Amino acid sequence: MSRLTELFERAKQIFQTEGLIPLVRWGFTFGVRRFFQYRRYHFYEEDIEALLRERNEANFLPGIENFTIKIVSTNEQADELAAEGLEV
Image (cartoon, rainbow, N blue to C red; front, side):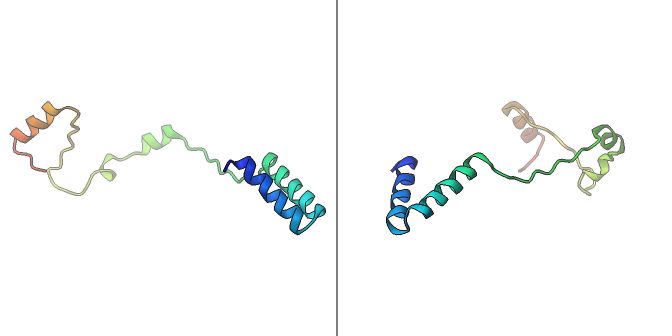
């Protein structure tokens, strides 16, 4: 059933059970909600340059001795790491 058909069925039901005035109220409320929506937005501003100046890379690394980060983007690089003895 399409959305428009559902709306007409609901309007018909309201008219038959409650009358014309509640149907007009329902239609007005429906129309107002379709065109006027109130939402709450939160905006904030950050100084990226200051964050980058204050950044300490030690805060982002795990506390493990001899820890090395390797980014693998190809199968060949993965094969090289496996040949070096890396196990996952």
